[in-house]
Amino acid sequence: MAYKILLASNSPRRREILGLLRIPFTVITLEGIDESYPRDLEADKVSEYISNKKADQFLKRIGDNDLVITADTVVICDEEILGKPKGPEDAIKMLKFLSGKTHKVTTGVTVATKEKRESFSSESYVTFADLTEDEIRYYVDTFHPLDKAGAYGIQEWIGAVAVSKIDGSFYNVMGLPVHRLYQVLRNFKIFQFPHR
Image (cartoon, rainbow, N blue to C red; front, side, top):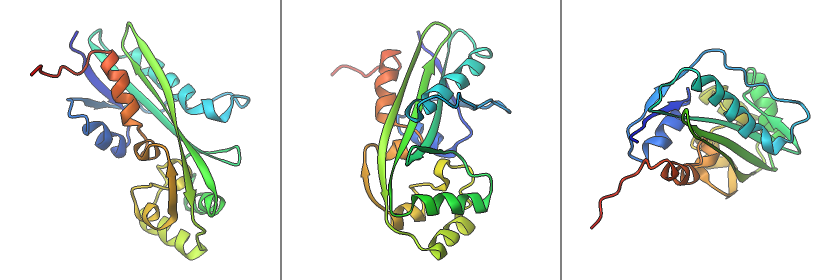
C-alpha cells in the first residue's frame, strides 16, 4: 500500500530532519494535545508514552491510507525531566542546571496507521561544559529557546560552544532519531529502491 505520510509536529527541526529521507510528507497539527503523563512513570519511558498519546489523537482524524508520525523529546538530568521552559527565567534556570553535567535526551517516536503501530525511544547522552551566567543569558536572550526541551537547541550557538561530547544520535538530540525512524518506515514498505 502506498501511504500518505503525515508528520504530526509543530517543530521545524523535525520537518528538516524528516526531509533528509527524501520522501514526500505533509505536516499536520492539532491544538491543545494533552502531553501529561503519570507521575510514577519512569523518566526513560515518558517520551514514548507521550508520542503514543499524540498518535491516539491523530489516528481519530486520519484516513485508511494515511501513516502518521508523532514524536516527543525530553531532557533528563539527575533523574529530573526537563520539558519546555515556561519563560526566559525558567530557561536560564534549566541551563544553569545542565551546565557542567552530562544529561540524557530521550525521544519517543510512534509510527501508526489504522492497522499497524510501532513505537520506540532513542537515547543520547550530552555533556555540557561549564557555562557562565552571561553566556546562558546571551543564549536565551538571542535564541529564545522556549519551544525546546531542556531550553536548548544543539544545532544553535549553544551547541557549538557548550557541548563537549555526545554519545548517541545527534539528530535524536535535535528531536527526531532519523536512523531508527528510517528502519521502522522500511517495515511499512515506504521505500522502494530500484534494482540495478
